[in-house]
Image (cartoon, rainbow, N blue to C red; front, side):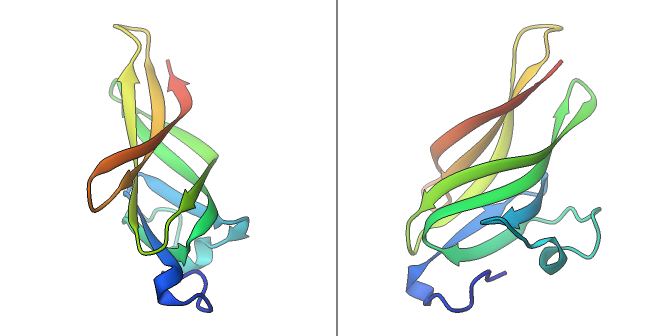
Amino acid sequence: MVVDENTPADQNAVVRFTSVFYIREWNNKDITDDLYDDEKATLSVELTVPAGDNSFTFDVAYSVNNGTYRLKNIELKYNLEPGKKYRIGSRTESMGFGKGAQLFVNIYDDKKNTLLKEWKVGEAR
């Protein structure tokens, strides 16, 4: 989905979210109706956005110890470069046996598969 039709193509960046994300807002603008038919959508989302400072608000689901943890209204801010493709993913890191896991959101340079930044967004106990 192109979120701003008025931005020239060479000034855009592409951001792909994996299927564990439910995108709610881009730069404080609700885009759920444009992306999903209903809240049960599980497909990856690819957004073409103007380069520069961008904000995405989303829900994300994690599988930890045979359970699912959902975090709602997480906001990620990042300065995107024109012409680049990015991938947003999630990961968990164990805090030790029986202690739960830390929950992270990551942004990657999609072409190079290089981690650019990681945010700790919560813990599952």
